[in-house]
Image (cartoon, rainbow, N blue to C red; front, side):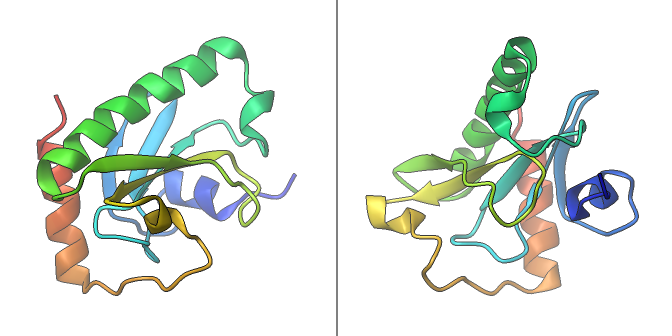
Length: 132
């Protein structure tokens, strides 16, 4: 299987706005976000479909995502952190964590927001620093 863009991000071959990582997972800001703070959590293991993951790794991914979601909510004003698993654009399992105020805020066919490099950097640092 050819390396995905996410595998290249993990390896540092493509830059990103990293939030956190551990031995199994990597979290970074989506560069075409639905909302400020929209973050992707991916496995370091390149695997196309989330539900093909071993049970233990899937459970660990959700726990890792929970820490990231709580940090996002501390930094970005919102009612909830929405969770979406779509997986059609990049064949590498990933979870979207999106600050939301209504169910319509998770419309992936809608417009995306624009942030400057400085805004992305500042946001990534603040979310990373808020992780417990």
